[in-house]
Length: 552
Image 1 (cartoon, rainbow, N blue to C red):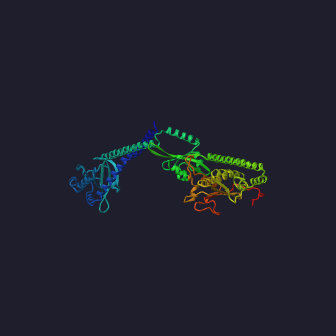
Image 2 (cartoon, one colour):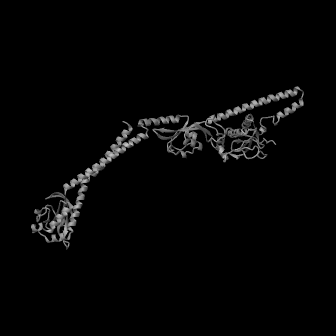
């Protein structure tokens, strides 16, 4: 049997039992309630008749057992009793004197005779309510005393309501109650059917065993996937998030949290809000991820969004290593060509006997002149990682017809404790500046300055490019913001500066735009005239020996 059918039958059974118990209690007490109601009505009628001044006077005048039946038949008590009985629908209205002799009765033949039931309670001054059988049949009757002007008990009034009428009233109440119960049952059954249909719609027609199996499969598949998965419903509430997504997106909020409260970066939040088939690159801390999303529909209903997250950090790191190796290769090829040319020059000078010129040339090669190295002043960078890195970047810049130079204040000794952080920040800044300087249409310049202050490294990189054109220069650090074409780059471009800033801030430092450039001409104070970036990287330098002295 299907789950929705079981639920429907169970609801109907519960509803039927509840109604049977509830209305059974109502029906069981119906007779007592009606009986009490009619008794109170009879008591009220009797009291009203006993309180009438004329009735009290006539009863007081007809005491004892010797009363005239013919006189009573045409007397005022008989007429008043008949009128009250007619108006109220009572079975009888009987008036008796202090001896229990009837002074008024529905049947004239019973006048001047003793009453058929005991009137002692009423004649003793108490109201008496009872179900009893008299000459007119069984009835619910009320007897009350009649007092004269002096306050003495001179008789009683007895009013009765037929039990047959009471039973008829009870049956009518039972029928009405039963119809009400059946109506409630019908409404409940209709509601149960509608609830079953709603249940089927909510569960997409799946049965209980299918739902259980689906949950098991979902848990097994989602947590075994190498990619992160985050799903939100149509109201933006997180319904599914696997362990990989938590790790890649740095999420610790439980399922049921609103997506707006997850602390996602603006770029990832935008992808989650809008279906994005083409994966976009985004940064989360020091990670680079590719995110895409699609909307889920079933039976014409919007079930929400599913965000896919792929870790591209290792690919980015590998890309940077490949770039470094490529740059090293370029530098080695350039040095090989430079060395071959220099040997040819020396051989020619010596072959022709120009010994002095050959010696001068050798002295120039061994110094720090423009011909001695690809990057002038590189000797001031004694940290081995950055020394080799800058030498390779100089060769790469030369290929792009850009001159990479070190600032006059550059001085760095010691050893990097986090070389990946330093090369990531410095490399992205230099690559960005080379790109800007090479696009200016003339031979460009990129100037790098490295200064160590204790264990903190300060980096400034400027270029001769057009500068930053955004109204807010800080916008260059936003994910995906770039002026370069990225059609062949998975996830798009515009990640370098964003990643560099996040890496710097992760270690307690920062990266900012010191000067957007673009609106000034080259001057000795501002050369080159393009954008100038400054980074502060604390705690990544292990100071070198104190015997090392900065060259003058």
